[in-house]
Amino acid sequence: MDALNRSGCPINLTLEILGDRWSLIIIRDIMFGNRRHFRELLQNSEEGIASNILADRLKRLVERGLLTRDDDPTHKQKAVYSLTEMAIDLVPLFAHMGAWGRKHLPVSEELSIRAELLEDGGPKLWEDFMEELRAKHLGKVLPPGTPSVLGRLTEAYLNVVERKKSA
Image (tube, helix red, strand yellow):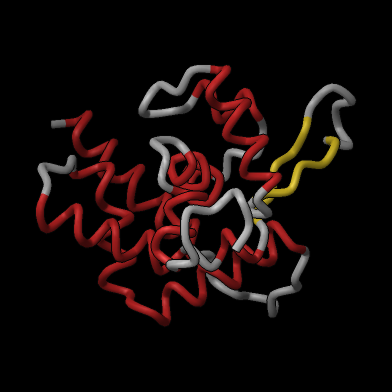
């Protein structure tokens, strides 16, 4: 046991990394929103994260091994954040959290449609999404013609938003 952790309990250790208000939200936005730059994460935050909090959490998530930070080859002063395998392994947790939230809390249709699709798709869809994230963030090559789970989730979200606008 090291001095940073209160106990060796796996739930405690997980909460010590992910249990603050923002860490899972940032990972969610990178994972499901494909937001890879600081400014995208800041400006497109549904929850309105403050810039100093975002900077702190990104630093912590990099230090804890959930994200990597690399210089953006297209812009010298920008960084690109990528999910690590440790973060990609959170897909089933996000699916379960979304299902629990949909069952017990007053969620909005547009912000819960992706959770519904993940719940309905089950472990097969989660694994397909994880493979897609590995390709996007870790450089794994997918077979040609592999359908995009992120594309499907994003399309469902945009369809609900458009339908609600037209109503």
